[in-house]
Length: 106
Image 1 (cartoon, rainbow, N blue to C red):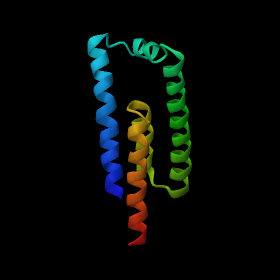
Image 2: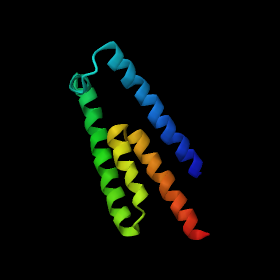
Image 3: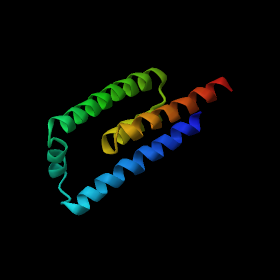
Image 4: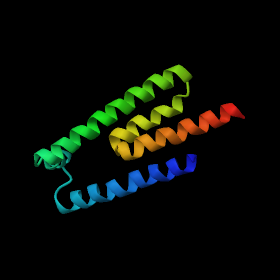
């Protein structure tokens, strides 16, 4: 099961980034122009806010569990979430967490 989350983290990196890179190549390499495009209409703005709230919730979860367990490598999920997206950060966090849980059981 753990490796399914690893595959999802890879997919969650490659698939969205292919769209972002295509957009930047077709338009400009200006991040603020992309943010403006994300808010082109109410539907896309709603999706942006949905993902933003999910990213903040994931970040809170990562921070709380990291400080409880002292497994600092889990913090890598935060820059993955905000640098790539929740589609990468969440499965990456679960992958790391499951590996540390499995190691405890051994």
